[in-house]
Structures are given as structure tokens and as C-alpha cells.
Image (tube, rainbow, N blue to C red; front, side, top):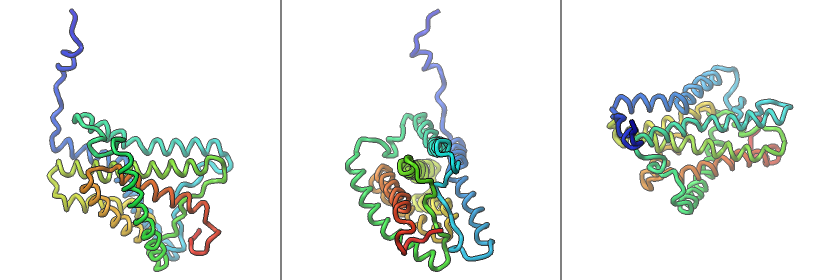
Length: 266
């Protein structure tokens, strides 16, 4: 007996996305990504504040070597870490496609590249300058660890990996913490104000390993990003801005560390 492909597809029942399904789905996505990072950062922070000595005398190192003295193995680990960190974004895309939408509904697509680039560059310029000043002040007051943005060996793939790492951070955080989380919380009946607080506190939480300054600074940045997302309806500019900020931090540190007196090093 011959059955048409269309009728076979139509015979499968469509899943009804109840509040419980949406809630559980959101908790699973966060548990696999930035929610787990928030818990990890909290544990790290407790360890730092209970360790003898001030916070500024301790260091939080990002983009460290995964296999010192073995550059090709190190490169493999770096690329694996970047790729695996983006799996939650692919999961979010899958959940949105199940609704008949996709990442485009969050404004993460290529339909408006130049406005996204322009807005993102403007955001990065404003936040970048104030962010450096806030970090230096927080560290000077003893509220922050010394952040070491990179500690990779001087090999040919160092700067490409730093750029890829920056873009990965931006895509993961802005798609999940802004676009996806705000959409799901809205569907669950949260008020816009409560959703803004949740998104911003979550962003601050997974930067707590840097200290109180990292938590507060990123929470304030989260408030601004939620406001801009609601204004523009796109995470694209936020991804661009975050990418530029992290590229500036990672590559800038690699170029300037030990060469300028105002930049703290471990």
C-alpha cells in the first residue's frame, strides 16, 4: 500500500507547548549553559573570598592553555571547547524551529548586517571605555580579582582562537540570556520588569568569579542590553557589540600586557 509522504507527516500529532514544557525546557537550557556557569562562578567566588589575601592579589584567567608545550593538541582542545560551548545555542534553535520559528525570531540572522554592525560598534565604543574604567576602579578598591583575559602560548593560532572565543561568548550569551530567556519568560507570564531583572542578574552571576565588580558591571550591562533588545527587536547588534568588547579585551591584553603600566597583570 502506497502512502504519500505528506499524509505521513500530517499523521504525527503536533506537540502542545504547555507552561510546564516551556519551564522545563528553559531550566534544561540554562542548566546546560549559563545557569551552570553561574553556579560555578559562585563557588569560585566563595573560594576567592575565603582565601587569605585580598581579591586583587588573586587572578581569574580566561583562555588558558589546555595542553602546555603541545601546540597542536592545545589547538584541538581550544577548538573543541569553542564548538561544544555553542551546542546550547543549537538546542535553542531546535526548540524555536519546533514552534515554527527559528533564531530569526530573536533577530539573529543576516537580514540586516549593516545596521547590526553599526549599532554594535557604537554600543561597544560606549561600554568598552566605561567598562575598563569600572574594572580598574573595582580592582583598586579590592572588589575584583585581577582578570587575565588570555594566557595562550605565542603560536600562530593564538589570535584566531582568541577572536573565535570572543565570538562564541557573544553568541552564547546574547542568544540565550537576552533573546531566548526573555521570550520564554514572557510566554510563562513574567512581567517585563521581572524578566529584565532575571536576565541581568543571570548575566552578572556567571561573571562573579571575577569578583563583586564583575558581577555588578555585567549586571548593569545586562540591563542596557535588555533595553536595546526590546527597542530594536534584535540580538544581532548585541552579538556584534559583545564580540568587539571581548576581542578588544582578549587581543588587547595579549598585545599590551607588560608593556603599559595601567594594565594589571597576574
